[in-house]
Length: 78
Image (tube, rainbow, N blue to C red; front, side, top):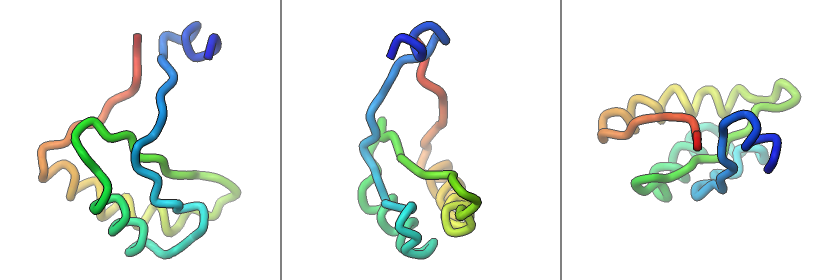
């Protein structure tokens, strides 16, 4: 936590975990996020070992959907 604070960030927890690391398919990831997202949500997605094609495909669908509903994106700061 000190490292985050020293970098001007604040640690936070996620509120939506579509378990994309299990590679359930882009549609399952999209549906999980759409079902669970609420105002102020923090969505946890993974980018590791190059196995991110399903997550990237899901994001290509989710980002426009979230923007259409008035959501904005940002980084945590102090």
